[in-house]
Every structure is written in C-alpha cells, then in structure tokens.
Length: 562
Image 1 (cartoon, rainbow, N blue to C red):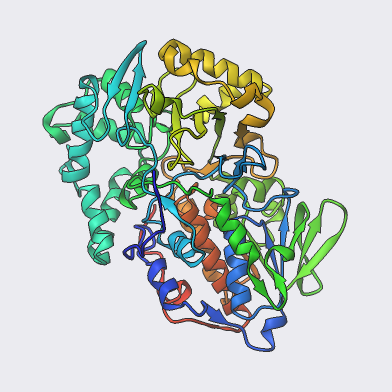
Image 2 (cartoon, one colour; image 1 turned 135 degrees about the vertical axis):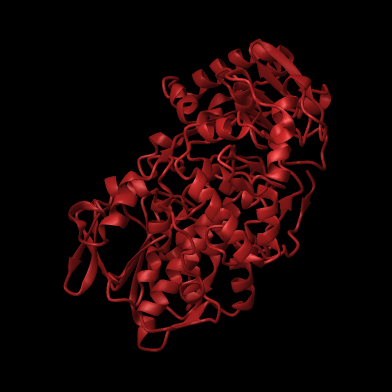
C-alpha cells in the first residue's frame, strides 16, 4: 500500500443532493463567503470539535468571523469519531483507526481538504477480494485470491449481485430499477435529471423495504439478476458473509435497503483508501490553521454541554459545570442521540419543528466495535497468510494493515475484529482489552490456527499495543454512525436540509451538522458537507455574502421520501 498524494478527483455529486461540493469548494478557493465588518464580531458557538465542527470553524474564520468558540466534551482530544490513536508516542506512524478508516475518492469534499493540507492516502484498503482473503463459513475455510472471483460456494450470489449492479432488475410488478452503476455514471457525468428520475423510482418501490426484504424481492423474483434465483435461507446467508465489497453485511440486513444502495450509488464502496497518517491528521491540520493570531485549536474549549436555552436575545449554551455561554449563532455537530440525551435539544420543542425534532429522536445509530493489535512483524507477508479474513464466528472481520510498506521487516497492525450491531454488542461482556483480545484470538484459532498463532502484541504488552473501542459505550457519541431503518429516509432529509432555514422566518439561529445529520452517516464526507452547509447558514443568517454556487442557493430537496 504505497502512499500517494491524492490527485484532483473528478467532481461528483451524491444522489440525494445532486449537488457537487467538490466543484463549489474548488470555485470558492478564496472562501465560501464573507462576513461584513458589522457581522464579523458575531459570537458563534460550535458544539463538537470533530471534522464537521472544525470545517465549519475553519471556513467561518476564513470568511472573516472573529469570535468562534468550539465546545468539545472529550478531554484532550479533537476529531470526534474520526479517531486515530497511536499505539505508542515513540512510533506515531503505527495507528489504530478507531472510527472512520476507509476513504473512497468519491468523497470529493473530504479530498479537497486532504489536497489542501497535503495529506496522502494509500492506493488500496485491504477489502475482501482486493487482497488475498479467506472466508470462514459454517466451519470451513475458503481461499479467495486477490482480484479473482470468490470461492465456488459464493459464486451464485456474487454473480447475481454483480449482475444487479451492472444491469439493474425488472421486478415482478413490472417496475424497472436502473443498474446502480448506471446511476453512479450519471452522477459522475453531471446528468442529474436522469439520475433523479431513476433514484425516485428506487424510493417509490423500495423505500419501505429492509436490505434483506429487498434482496428477496430482487433475487427470488421472476427475473433475478444473473439468471439464477437465490435459495432461502442458504444463499442469503452466503451473501451476508460475502457482503457488497467491504465485508459481511448480515448484521445490517434489517437496515433500510435505500441506505445500503446509497453506499453503492455514491461509490463509497469503490476504491477505498487508507490514510497512512490517520484521519486525525485532517483534524490536526484544520486545528493548526491560524487566524488573527489564534489557531482554530486554540479556540476549542473543553466543556460538556448539557442544554441549549434562549436567553437575552441569544442562544444560551448550558454547561455541565454549571456555567453558561451566550452565542448569536450556534452549530451543533454531535450525534443525533447526543443531541437528544446530552444536549436535550428536542426537549420542549423550542428550537425545531416537529419533523426535525422527531428525526433527531428517532434516527437509528449503529453500534460498532474494533480491536487492533500491533505485532512484531508483518507475519502475513512472512508466511503467505491472507491479508483479510471474514468469519461467521465471534471475530467477524480481520484486516492486516501495513503502515510501513517500505520496510518488509517492520511492525504490523492487525484489526482483529471489526463488528456492527448485535455482533458488536456481544463483545461488551468481555471487559478489559487483554481479556477481549485473548478471547478473539482463541475464536480465530478455530478458523485459522496458523494466523492466530502470530497474534500476540509487540513485547506481549497488552496495555500499550492493543487498542479497542466500543462506540455504543462512548458517553459523548452514544453510538458509531447513523443507519436508518426502512421508511425513515425522511429523517435524513429533515436533518440535512435544516440548515436552509437560515434567513427565513423560521430561522432559530441553531443549525445541525455532523455526519449523523447527513445522508451518509459514518462517512467523513457527510461531516464535511454538513460543516460547509452550517457555515454557509451562519454567514447568510448574519447578513454576509456567500460565494456563487453555494449549497444554500443552489441545492434543494429533489425527492419525495414518503
């Protein structure tokens, strides 16, 4: 995985917005807007110093704002769920990506900032089938060579899924769903009206379906893609283990089919990359930018917010230590669950209409767990072992990561377990990372004893050289990322477009941001997009001027999500 500086990616719009943030940021290179002399002194508060909050602060300061304060509940750390943790300070290049870890170039807003700050990506993330892979299913192991078709047992579902992506499907009621890859091409070519019509057809016919129920409708129908009907339950269990490109998806079979299709159509499952410095490098670069003699990072205050109230013509932020801060405008970037539980933002219905309030309260947040080991050697290279292992046991997803590709004798990093939802919740009972690590290695030893034999932390130091995280237990995030259930796409619409209240009669001076308020929860691009949106909202609401092509003026909801 040789690092490379990202080249300018082609401009790209996500399907639900039909708006190209890459083009806007490129055209607005001098800044997304400008605050006049009178408005520049407005007191602007931002709850959360994750990627979204940092992008918003950075762009507002570039626009001339002088009084920007970020309130971060996590002591000693910025970045939110873009969380890179080094195993030891002596070797900072060996890291565990405890949050976001895959970065496809269709995230054009994020890649704009990576280029601006000179942050390199590697050429490939070790997804199943991209590198030598082993799949363990019902007690047997199956080898899958890099860039080859999957093992024979999985080929029926693989062919069917690929045929659906390339050709689409005609459902039994005669509705024709366009090939997802065609939708991606329409977006890349800027043919937004055609893309809109095809996506609306998906929303109308599949908006109330779970991922599993949509798969049944597509592959057990009269004209299944690939020409072979899938058998229940066997083929669906096989597909659950194989996944759609980045690993098994069975834990999210209950999620909305539309949510999963967003990943595909928006090319988020394509050409996924790794950032050798870690995604926290982006947080660090944003925080290091200096305006009027103070860096963005120096404007971060460690404080836990416990309420938002109205007071003396201002937005009053209540702090857990009993203090309060008044702002003229407020951006809230934390997870929807934290908005409800910690900030009490929907309590009493003072800030938002009933639709936005319900979207905050009811949006589903996925649980996720990871455990990483720093190893003495890149043993998978030494012994010809798979780079990636997918299992239907406790471990689930194993990924070997090379942060020192120029040194074959260097240390290795292994993500020994990456789990979602119920598979993540099971691990909460394993208290202590040493105990959890040993239990996971024991589980993997049943599948691949040779691989498991090498899974010992450097110097047998479980305290320093094992990193774990359970996002459902994080008191500030309360979960990993947004993934709606069937019929809930309207929640994403209400949250994402809330910023467009700026300057209207219903403008309350509070704007929502963060990936949980986007259409793509869990992806850095959602945080970047909503950070830009909220900064534009503040500039407009304070009477400033926005650059041409901005999302307040040029983007609107184009779909019926009922």
